[in-house]
Length: 465
Ligand code: GAL
Image (cartoon, rainbow, N blue to C red; front, side, top):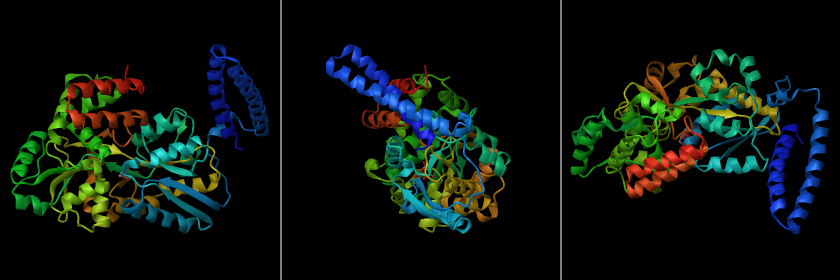
């Protein structure tokens, strides 16, 4: 058993032991017997741990947290885990094809769990990690989803040696490296950069309906009213996480960059009247959306725009990937885009990355996978199909669509803020609780109580005092 697993088991056992110690003081004879049993297992565990530590005593403890690089030829099974299935699959498959040309001896197992933004995959991953059955590598968002969840739990390998060996410290933007790193290490390899504040539409339809692309929230609400009187749905929305993404777009438009950032730094109170206003604006937006949103995937919400049932959809630019790669629409004529109203000059950012959890069976193959993820060839195979732009600064933009070129331009020139729905600014605990707050708001539309509830979950998830 690898030493990292032993440390993990030992820690879990210690927590459990502490709890039982407490119960044995307060409980009866049965509890005392259980306590005695656990004492023995703890001692056995401690001696196994000590033996394991002796075995690898040549390696200092901090090095056991670092990825090991060697000259072995990677081979054997490599399981990579993500939510890029079905319509979201082609970009990943292109990256895998690139990997296979370099590492033909590796048997790559592409494990996916369907569900936009990883709603289902993240739950499966958590169970597997707790059962000590990690894949060799898994998809995770740069930012708090990685750091506040897996790094804080001490479950990831430090990839600093790999970054140094590959020269990646000079190739990835320092802002992105800051989001995947802590003072103790670098924890994942970014594959893509996505923008979450994009509004999609079909130019010919807007022309037919006689409306212009709105650039401010006020303009949006005016256009929405006009569309509604013509019997056209102004905005399509899908399942809860897509509504959270709409919420973050409205928060940015209502607060502006400075206050939006302050919210995540803990400098702006969740009960501030400005936040109540965000909820009110979000409620206003909901008045112009479909009633069946809860049952629709993000692709189905996009389909409503493409099919002419709705005028607009706010969604990250994987929607461009879907419209170009799956629906074969041409950017500019087949579909149009603009920043979500009120967010011009700002790029609401997220990045997909892959890391290596501690305790994987085939670290050599996992390292090979990360090399492909971070390579120029890998990123230029993946991102043009995905609708994202490369995380690397030296990619060949000639390979990219008109949409992606415009996103690359925005990324270079706009102010960057982090996405909530895609794990940049908040940890997974907050995100899960926020879904519940937002669902309640969708039913009762009570802005003040939503602001109050958000304050409580920020506190309970360590994001506010
Ligand atoms: C995001 C992810 C994107 C895309 C999207 C829809 O969280 O970063 O790459 O997959 O979900 O599922």
